[in-house]
Image 1: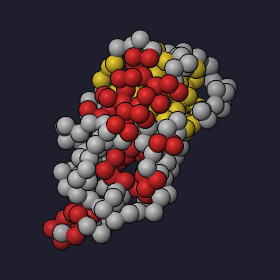
Image 2: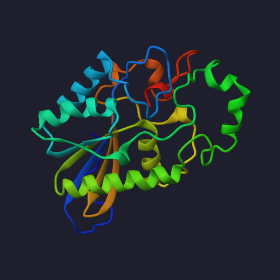
Image 3: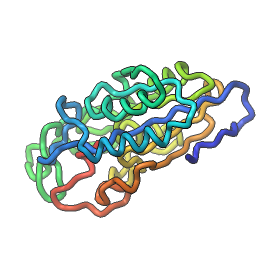
Image 4: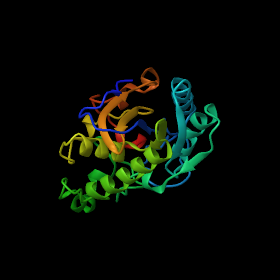
Length: 235
């Protein structure tokens, strides 16, 4: 774990760590961009990833576990909550970003991008024009992070969410531009992006991949795209 426990500015207040976790691999043999669609569950490998992270966090001072309402997030969070004897909470603000391509295939060299009717959705990568705005994602995710911080004051919380909103809120906190190359997101399956608070202020951000050895190579950050396979599938 790379999250620092030392405040950057000497501000007063107890330390609280909120781990923003991406869910594990999803069973999706047809390569659908499933977004917020119901019925997409963890694969067997995804359940292994969830168990791995639960074991990784078993010795941590976790007092609050909360997840997006989507099946894959709930299933990822369940073994973590169980390991700490906690009830699993749900926060709709942790949900996946809206996307007009939801329910379509979205691979490299095939899928929805081959259809000219869809090109109108790609005109503005800065908002973006194909779905929920980055600013809206920041607002709801910061709200979810702050709520988890309040629920676990002086301890640690785990929030299970999805790749894009996790990366966007991290980019905001680290003062990077919100528009980006999706292939370069540092947010692999079952990863932990950890925010350390002193009082109400975030003083450090860390990142770790407890299940990295289980993640398919084409889904790792910086991996070369493979025809018929897209990182978007596991969002």
